[in-house]
Length: 246
Image (cartoon, rainbow, N blue to C red; front, side):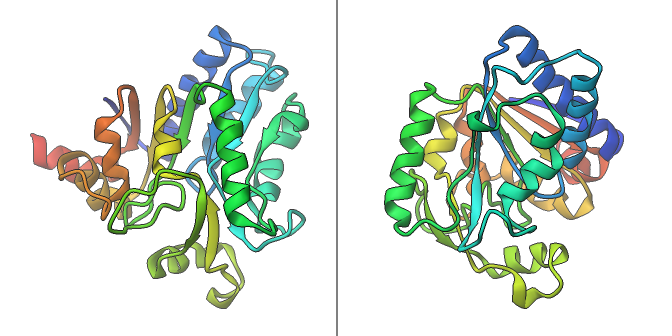
């Protein structure tokens, strides 16, 4: 596990983009595991600029997103399908046919999860999985629970997650209460992990994720067992971790 501490959100975003760009230069047909939410937006902006400058290309890339609200139409501006198009896909040279996001309107979530896992498995595991971390320790939408759920599945969102995501909606009542998410087992098949975290609000859970015991009550703690993890933090998110180890 490698931990990078950036000065601020912009530097965190730049470092994350550099890690992705390094992979794309070495492997133009890389399989990317992508994430949504506020944290990776800056990194996506950096990647868009690199693409416009001709430094990297997404022409041969395939992508597999972590999760999607359920139920939600792709055309809904709060869907993660819409988010990815708006924040990355519409601005780079990726073939939209090679992008994959769980179906937020699936008639059968169990069948959707099985099919999605088969897609990811066919890649041999994505080359790099981008993750954020929720204030309660979730990765994807794997909420604190009694066991690590291995497969892509339907989940009921934690009350804290709903409150945290309310900032993206007109009211908390509009926030979906369910989602389809890659399971912990699917995430752990990634050849490498890139986790981004910023802001003082993430400092307590970052410390717990890295220094606490591995437990499904802190889903991100499972990353302690992954063979190749890069953690990119800004100074605020790293504050409690640094004070503990100094």
